[in-house]
Length: 318
Image 1 (cartoon, rainbow, N blue to C red):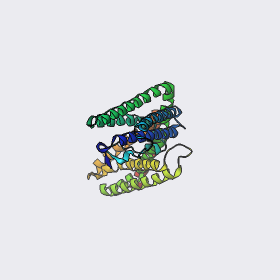
Image 2 (image 1 turned 135 degrees about the vertical axis):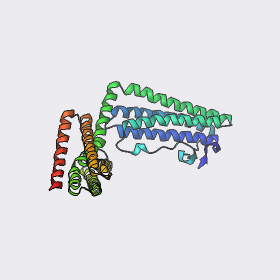
Image 3 (image 1 turned 90 degrees about the vertical axis):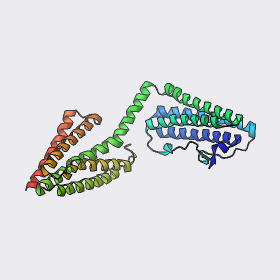
Image 4 (image 1 turned 180 degrees about the horizontal axis):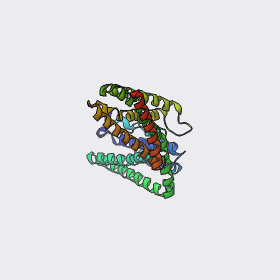
């Protein structure tokens, strides 16, 4: 890699041209990734990509007038200390807020880089060129705001935000809630059956640990294999499976960990309190994200939990 301070004026201008071209293609990628569900935001990024093309043309005209037709290939990764970008535009599906923040950071960081380099430059012509590039990036940032105001009206933004919320529920909340419910409820029976059968906190802990980890692995595979997300829009199956499996294990471990307490009665009371908290959290999540009335959600969850809990006690005392 070459240090930015060692670049010639020709190389700096070539780097700026490459940067503008790459940014244009990034914005195109954002537009294509958002077009199906967020058409207004996709149009914003189409316009920003066109503006990057115009700026690239302007810079290349300046380069041609000073250095001729040959344009050396200099990219971000060839220059030490230059802005490196993670390939967010290749991800599918794209998150609306993440893309907006990423684009704003792109323009801000590029302007800051050029301005910082200009202050460090000794050659007057290079300093002037870097200042001009910083002003161009500032214009890009202002353009993003102005285009957003023109295209993303209040109603359009509200519609896209609601779509984003639904996608969040489908991709994260639903598999996470399913896992939390399964881990919190299904492990109650084996855990408390072992507790009342052995009256040993350590043995009960081992049973609960095995049940929680086993249920987590099972739910992770079940969720990942149930839907590839291509038609339902529920996102990557691996991610959903990981969320579901992790929440399943957490749900079971919540009321398993109290049995690390040596005193059996104390551990039993603490575990019962944890179960009550878990059922309350599940009820709230169902009310908050699934539009289920709070009392109805609490009734459904508590009844199921109590039945499994009673089953565990009966089996453990038999």
